[in-house]
Length: 116
Image (cartoon, rainbow, N blue to C red):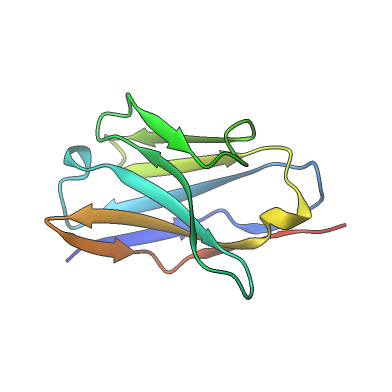
């Protein structure tokens, strides 16, 4: 059974940093690319970043590429999202996502709130 469990969200002041984690189980983690999405209130879910199965290739949404870093540890079955210079508009629920054998799986999400 595929499971994705996010953690690391919280309340942070503008300009601050957070590191999100997503622990995966139920599949061979090192075989699959992983993605982070986010959904702000009243908005559609959007892609934040993606990382290849080996971690050798990463992509980012334009508005985040200079502030966010996606990484993974294939021993710990974990994908990370380091978020720096956070802005109020980064406030959203952040989700981990994996496409495994043509089926998409989502975590439960972790709330990130950027506010003074």
